[in-house]
Length: 266
View 1 (cartoon, rainbow, N blue to C red):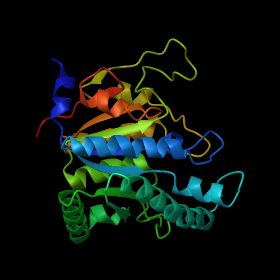
View 2: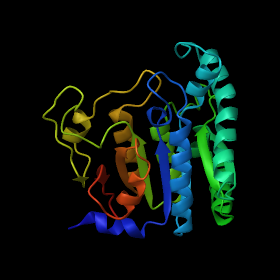
View 3: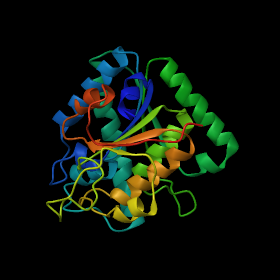
View 4: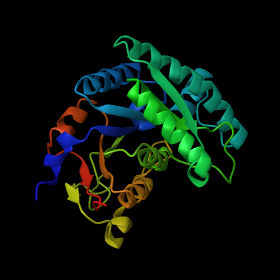
């Protein structure tokens, strides 16, 4: 069965953009990449798609703005960097989307939006209204107020939560890797990309490594965790390389790129 044929019919799509896709290796913001992403999202919207962006990078942007060499190790330090970076990141997205006359809505979430029925309902209604109005919700974790009890911890998990809240048709996780491999491709040149996975078995979970960048937090393990969340809600997930944002067009045309995790249809 060609599972990818159905991708062209997906209408409500959550796209998660990792820090590695938004910054250079030195942690500086890659403005050209962000502009490119907004152009692609604008065209997808013109095609009738509804797009939600889960954007990493706020801490990295804060670190870059203050000229620090690395991320702070303390929670208050990270929260301060997120507060500085989030404001800058929202302004950048607003600038690039305004070229297409598209409004953005900034949404900052904590884990209690899942555990609280009222907050979950309010978030669901907010997303629905923004999408109905043609706006693009830009989502991140609310790092400045997160505590041990309500912290999400990584934007892979956050993107899956958002896909669930939005009742999305598809989650696309863009990172610095071409998909899910049978072993870590950074360490094993003979590693093979798996095109389609219909079940997250113990073998798949064990194959998920923890590789990431100095400025990011998520490895493959967090992505598989996100896939598991989406599987429970019948949402397909794709992990793909975000170096060239136009890959989104090819993915939605059904081309064999990245790894498609097919969810059971509820």
